[in-house]
Length: 232
Image 1 (cartoon, rainbow, N blue to C red):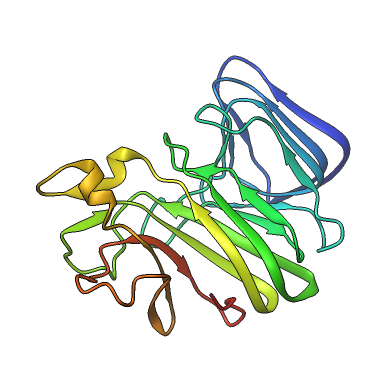
Image 2: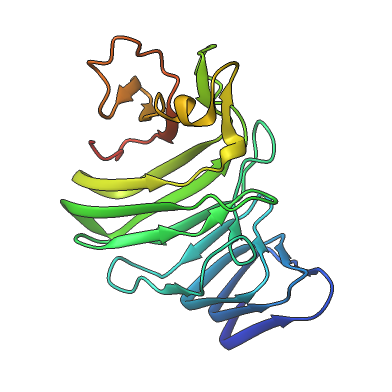
């Protein structure tokens, strides 16, 4: 189904979008009780998160149509205004896909069912095809390949690029204090041992802690996979 103009979801109770795939020019969310999509959503122009959380269940939200027609998300992101795009079982996850290009920073205002934990990716170089995009979700759990370290996050992010090669980028993950596991000491001490690490088909890649003598993968995790996985 394709709808021109703007679809406005407003109300005082949870609303649900149900169809196979829904293509919209604009979508506006204005419902403090939230909106749940049981359909893949394609937003060609603008998603406006005025009030409430848009939950993608096990579906994908796509913003824009190409690397030159990227679309946008407008709102003041925060705990009451974000996209719930998260791993809900061993085999399913809601996702957000944004079309991207070089020399810009893209904010993925995502979280799980009740916690906001966004990702920001700023590309500084690379080759971008016309359909270049990055697909992201968050998992509110310990990374399954992490082992049993002393300190770790009970949260990780998975990002999968398409149509991107030889890229360099800066990436920021936001976690909550309650995501930090430590069996002794303080939160501040535990956080001093947390560093971002990437996991892909070739295993773990440390971002800045190869020389750390206590390196044990007890770090902050972002997982990236796929043939076009950008280099760090």
